[in-house]
Image 1 (cartoon, rainbow, N blue to C red):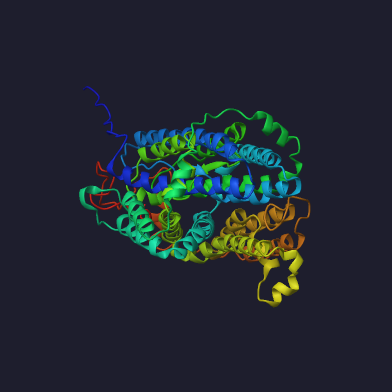
Image 2 (cartoon, one colour):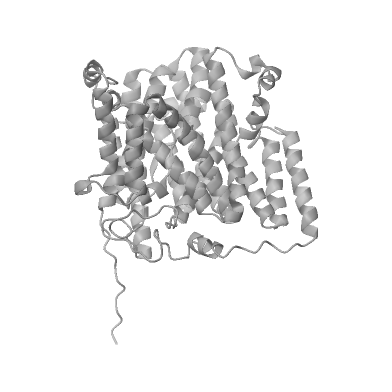
Amino acid sequence: MVPTKPTVVALPFWVRGDTNAFFGFGVNVLVNVLTLTGLCVAVVNLPEGEVFGTILPALGIALVAGNVYYTLLARRLARREQRTDVTALPYGPSVPHMFIVIFVIMLPIYLRTRDPVRAWEAGLAWAFIIGVIVLVGAFVGPYIRRYAPRAALLGTLAGISVTFISMNPAGQMWRTAWVALPVFALLLIGLLTDVKLPFQFPIGLAALLVGTAIGWAGGAMSVPDVTAAARDVAVAVPSFKLDLLLTGLGDMAPLLATAIPLGVYNFTEGMSNVESAATAGDHYNLRSVLLADGAGAVIGAALGSPFPPAVYVGHPGWKAAGGRTGYSMATGVVIAVLCFLGMFGLLATIFPTAAIVPILLYIGLLIGAQAFQATPRAHAAAVVAALIPNIAAWATSQIDNTLAAAGTTAAAVGDEALNGAGVVYDGLLVLGQGAILAGLVLGAVVVFIIDKRFVRAAVFAGVGAVLSFVGLIHGEKIEWNANGPVALGYLFVAAICAVFALGRPAPRVPDPDEAELDRRHEPSAPAVATAPATVAAPDGTADGTRPASAVNG
């Protein structure tokens, strides 16, 4: 008897859904690169020649390498599991780090020295250290993911989405609502329902074109601005900037206070994003993901970019849009070409910001919903607990920015005055430090208390005590006894849980639907992105007509 060969699934490089995901994700990355470009020029006063001639080409190299890598990773997963519905992980410049490196690292040095190059050197050193920490996290992160409950991982990711990813775009949208809301409505109709445009026209592109047309017709854009920006377009070739990096590393001690917790933030966020993808049906190897993220930050810093790239929040959204393996690589290549050609100054004058940012709010909706829909209903309180530190971090950043615009600081105003106005700034500041890790710890403690697994709750509370004591969470900097009172509070929680554990209570009995959630969550389980009764069609949707659900898988 001749053994039969295993069936090899046909895996196209591009499906119809990739077009939707490409325009959606491409616009997402586009607005982020436009933002960091404006921050470099307007905040740190870096010369436009250095921004367009060095920083953006360096970022372009990192984006091409990373998105090609994640495309190949997705195709390897698809072949191994004989599936056509695998979605590549999205990859781009880390949004929180864009603001942190500018306002926390580079701006203070620029204000002190009035030398933008000195500030740039510090930013490169900081990004390099972030990359090294993420590389180390590649060997630690898988163990954290193995023992951290899903509600804690997805809850803290939802906290980032609802606050840092969604709120600023939402504010920009309602500032120019007459442009943004029609775009947002088109995205919701096209990406959350089975309604299709005629001739299968990509909804992301249609939304961008409609918003741009409304913006130009309403006088929000200017032809002279476009003409002036077009004159500045020029080809730039990336090159190594090791001299700047080494100079910055020569004075790296002050940078460690933020680089260490944010490096930990990076690999913790990477864990949450891999967990999010697994919940949507695509089980990626965490170590492979974190090694790529760390290498991207190191290479980018060596080439002159102070903006560490990372796997993005939003994999379920692009999966729901029909994206498979092609959209990620296409996005990386196109954005890189725009970086090499110095086109971002021109694009900023063509597309209204209000026509671009609604895609970020859409992603925030998807990730926030997933945190509740892909975890047991009994753990809903734990999801909220994991959200809270991120909300606190966002709130304190808004307070700080407001006071800075008024020429003062929270310290100058004083806690007594702020508390008198109903602003609990001191408490929010402590709660929001190291928000990703803090949300993970708090969410895990709540999950295990709900499940009456008090030993595990005590262990995570003990971890919270250690992290607080050294300043990785709830502390303004890394130091011994960074926040003793908070560490003591976590120790009391651990002691209480240990006492209840002595009674050996029976663990909570899972609800009937939790077994299916766990089955989909396990990497060894058959990973499908749609409901069990459907299969992926060649166009990348569940049944050829409706986008695969981002929260069912």
